[in-house]
Image (tube, rainbow, N blue to C red):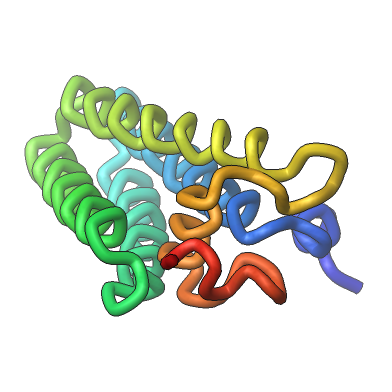
Length: 152
């Protein structure tokens, strides 16, 4: 039997899954910042590794051949946040972790807005660009039948 979190994500859209991954990054960044506050070097390293693993996963799922400029922008964002997190960890800086948290939170909120706009009444009828962004991020069609319509 799967965990609650697995069950909660079973019917989630591609955009909802991206938001959940951003939530994971934030959870681990908060844990890293708290570990710095406590002087827990091992805890900081574990939390940073987990946050970076999620960023690597998101970066690897980008489809540059399909996503164009939005995919490039996300790629640059992931590279920047990755570097920020490494720098925050290396210097054990709560402030630098806070800055990385703010950056991730801002982009997470943008994805959350896309999720709200693209799924009214349980349908995938949101903005054409939103579907494209979800496909770019997930590396696959957000749902059957819309796979290439956003590229027109």
